[in-house]
Length: 425
Image 1 (cartoon, rainbow, N blue to C red):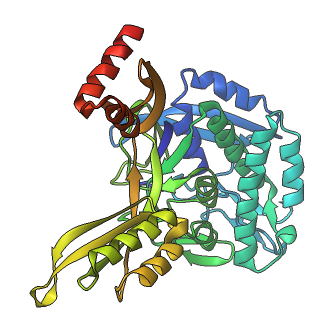
Image 2: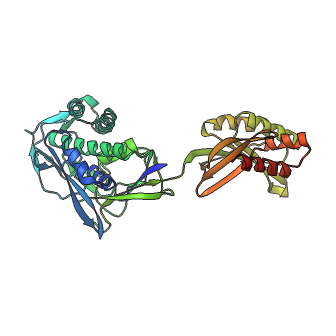
Image 3: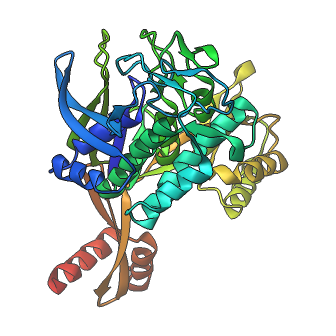
């Protein structure tokens, strides 16, 4: 499966993710030209080489009407009160960037979500990409709405900063479409630490909007006392990433490094890896209980009922229990959505007083079934492959039928079927 893995050990920001994804392309400069031709008002993208802690990567600079919106890098502290004397641009520069000390006075216009939607609708990008852009921006607007206690429709963004964020989000959404990964995975997110200064005062890291966006996402604070994950970065991860996990078994085909501006003891770098992973069938639920007072007949009937209700697997293992009693461990494997049904059945059909639950990943080989024509009829053949393994097996029921009809052993039938398959080839 074509998989994109995002390493968020140094957080995530729109410009860093853009630069990293561009490095995955065979001709990144050509794609930057495409970005500059999109028609985002006043926006110019510039990709430059960058080195952090001896690691080579790229840095993406976005200017709006010639101004680099470092201070409102994520553009997204809502200026819902328009009587501020100025916007303090330390906040949402996310400390990945140099503080240029810009100060924009309140005569700069502001944009609401409705104006942002108009900008996006006018972009010369596919409809699916527009949908992604608007979905990401709405996540940000909802976060700001929650933080400030105002309806989404009343949230306003500083205009230059808003367009800067549109530029970041648009670039990432277009790049995701260009790369075409079947799944996007990411590591837990380093949000940074310390405090940041914004128009509303000094706030703890992660900033309230970022923290809201990262609900349900594994995040942590490392040694760097700076704001590492921006609202735009958080919203992009929330929209595109299907699962946050350690790096899976991945055959890498390309690696990209997007660099921030500031220097820390750790390389200020967001790294992405594009490659192939084996298919994983999500997770399953294992239900377990110990039994020492059931007859073999009763337990057999209980397992029959569990299979009838949809258990993927049910089996017993001999165990030694308290008071030196010999007993059985009953293990039932089922789909997560069938858990409650299986728990009720275990209590109904067994004598247990308690059931333990484990949710566990499930890895499977790809399976195919084909038919082999033999003088004795059709025999199904199962082939399973993946993770460097391949195995084939003739269907037992078909072999057993022929063995009974011809008074042969299973080994004799297997040889006859294999010979028939070889002759057919």
